[in-house]
Image 1 (cartoon, rainbow, N blue to C red):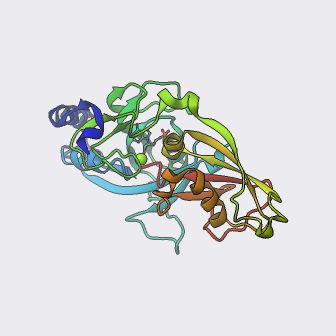
Image 2: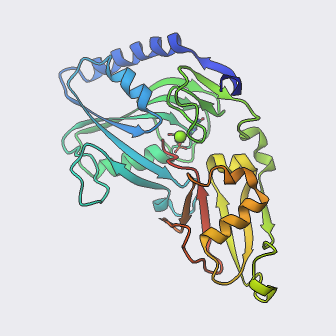
Length: 297
Ligand code: IMP
Ligand code: MG
């Protein structure tokens, strides 16, 4: 696994030194107050555990889990709140942590486009906290899609894909004790963005039962985040037989993109702003999003 890392950016001693400084700063700023920390799962786990143990204030801790639909046109559909812990559940509903009148500090692993933190901040603001501040371990130096100014930043980094110390690529590398840049052979990122293309995928020979209704409908499939990087394709137009399901669509995509099949168990399928399962019947012209799990983590 170590050989997948092109370059170590911050080793354990460097992370520990910076955590000491951050914890000191937060402890001073919140002196004589009780802090309500909302950690964004899963990426912030290590950061949260190590940072909070350095803060000698009364602290309440809650966690949020989100899935982001980056790049989708509908802003409301971009970040879906999956679950909240340590809060009384609203009968299976996503229960937001109770932050009314509290001094909230949102902890996240990395600030990239800003979609995730903007959505979380906006959502928590509706619950009338006394104050909301944002603390991220890493912040990428880049033009962001959303304007977020974090109040506390561990390290600023260039716009490259990093893993370790909680941060993942397809759920791997979170357990590395350092933060490093993932090698280009493991992750096709910015450098390869120009190669990301739109393509049309012809139906599988087995489709269209007898060939009579082959290509009766088209759906547009968009790939997100690491899955897009993995195959180097942003969008596919797929010809399908009438009555085809998401399962049929995936079979067809996997036939031309076998690397995707390895992630079959974990991918999320969005239709509009809803998640759907393999039995979802497709409609002509429908837009389908294929995403990695828990992007906000
Ligand atoms: P944003 O919504 O684009 O700001 O993305 C935030 C989420 O994307 C983070 O919480 C991470 O889970 C993920 N992410 C963005 N950049 C990286 C990276 O370089 N390495 C690992 N995860 C990343
Ligand atoms: Mg992640």
